[in-house]
Image 1 (spheres, rainbow, N blue to C red):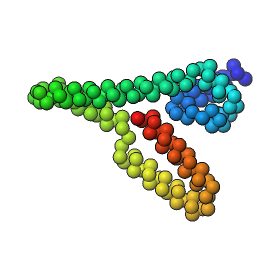
Image 2 (image 1 turned 90 degrees about the horizontal axis):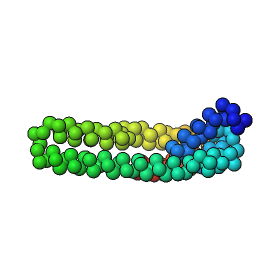
Image 3 (image 1 turned 180 degrees about the horizontal axis):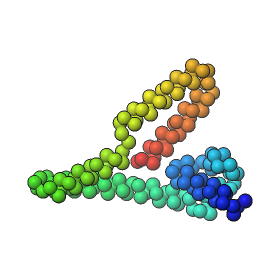
Image 4 (image 1 turned 120 degrees about the vertical axis):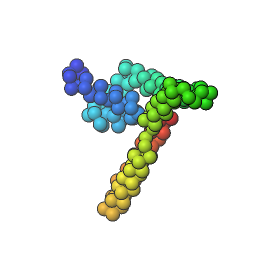
Length: 149
């Protein structure tokens, strides 16, 4: 099976999930229907850890560069506010920064959704499932905090 098309698809999808922050090999094994040993071998042979760290580092560098560019553009714009090219540059950088951040509306929607899921589980008597859900949500929040700087 190791050379089959289906196996390669599982490996590629597993790699994508790993690089997107789902780094627990046991969980990945369950999701993709392979053994934990297989996932660990993929991580090691594919050097996924190094790729994951490199992507986080690059994301951080991009955010820093974006902030520095905005500061520099604002300084230049302050010297010459009539310069339409600088106005456009500042607007472009600000829009890019805004596009990279989750919207307040999305955050509010997610909070309302999680509240409703919690209420539903309490009403239905799913206390055990609620504890598992809360654990997953906390893990997700930590992952997003790390991923988004």
